[in-house]
Length: 248
Image (tube, rainbow, N blue to C red):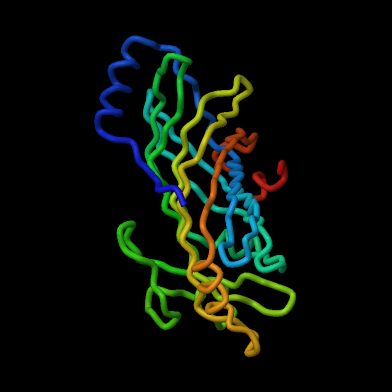
């Protein structure tokens, strides 16, 4: 997957210089619904087949703007997963919303085509905690950093399938780069990196971890594209995931 990249000190200096020359900065809303659409095309070398995997992520983003600098806080609300091995998996909205909010700095940069929004990377953790951005995710379910976030007596969070639950840990780095759309929205591309670890499953006849590792060893990413839309919410500072999901 693509690595998440952050804004740098030179970019911050560029923002300061340009803000002094251009006073008509976009005014950001207090809260937004963030919709991310991820499309990944993979090739299975053993079977000689291709697959297109589409994932949709919905989050609440709260913004505090001071001039050209914006402090953003992201709260996951919902994920719609692609099928895995011909089976559709789901994660409960209530589980997604138990993830701790993630913060990132952002800047409004006056480029040739107009102001653009660039953010550092959010680090979203689900089913794990106390993992630094440069540390690998825990690989075993009995690691003290793996938490039973959905309180179902299993490590991590559960992905529900018709025949079983798969116990997982996840980290997603996501940084935004886009521009105002003239209707209060921002839209653009996402630098997205997702790590997923399986700790076990509820079906003793199936080895979900082993099957996932075997599939990964035979699969390569052919292409990927990640886009986002930020849509302002009427609820302002009082907005919640309920407001985000009501307009999806």
